[in-house]
Image (cartoon, rainbow, N blue to C red; front, side, top):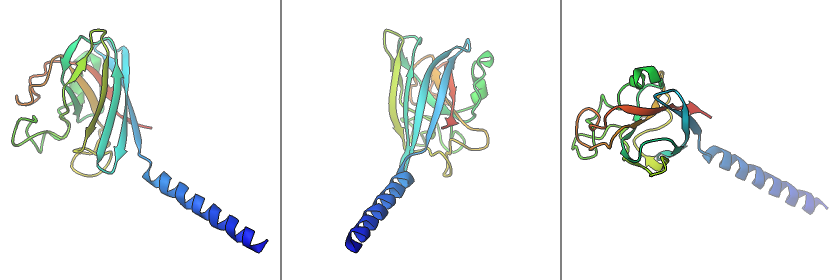
Length: 177
């Protein structure tokens, strides 16, 4: 009977330790709700913090078909009336030059162009190793937060300061949880 009690305790402790390990490695999550220039909700994003960067998944609708610039901007404010200029510049624009094709780039917030299908939907799944939720050179959750922005045209990955991606057509403020 004593052996059974000891075995039960060992199993319980092992299970508890495994649960603690899993909780410690579970990623932090953030979300964003995208609005268009009319202030209408057109999609959502989920961001997961990992030990090596941030995984971004999003689905938007009612966008014009074709390639679009997609960036993380340095301020967590999306004012449709101002064309989303409230979101500021690309995250990390003070420390790097814009563009994947630039030797002194990219900004931490520079992301690959995304394609909107003929039906107006854009599905995103990408990873950015240059950002983190907190700490480092490009935290998403600093004092003024950050936002995801969709631009009207494709980023050329070179032009300063934002890749000639044209006006901002959708914006989503990043929020924890």
